[in-house]
Length: 211
Ligand SMILES: NC(=O)N[C@H]1NC(=O)NC1=O
Image (cartoon, rainbow, N blue to C red; front, side, top):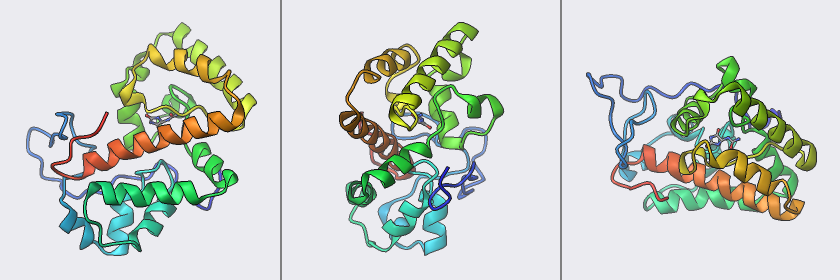
């Protein structure tokens, strides 16, 4: 894992620890990530560098460097503007950097899940998709497909699990295994952006997470 942009299991900032009995809900009614509170764009624009990276450092999985670069672009006019800066950073990277971002992602239903080493966001997405409760045969099938995919493309298979679900994961994996490498890099980066869009929408109040 490259050390320039990756963090291991970064704890989510505890911006609001007084939830009471019920955790806050996202615009789609899902619980917000543990330890985070919704905020508006004025609050985002008022953040100093450290706070911004703490809060947005895992919008792109284990790549806080991207949030660090995006902070310089403030003020942001809203969620879409903020998102645009995260995505522009990814698009401006050479393929080696884009592949590096993909390599910062844990496998779906992989070793890091079993070891309890996922980030809070990834765990929530994988468990929401039912990937934490697979039977042994399903887990084995996914492990085989993940290994084949990694051997073919040199980076892990990435899919926005929250938008799919457990049945779709092996199906999509088997399908994308057949794609040409350049097409597959584009497809994988599109999934990274979907994951980032959902994570950003969770963090900002009043913005329904797009599907
Ligand atoms: N491998 C992979 O797609 N991992 C990511 N997908 C997702 O929804 N959360 C993740 O961590």
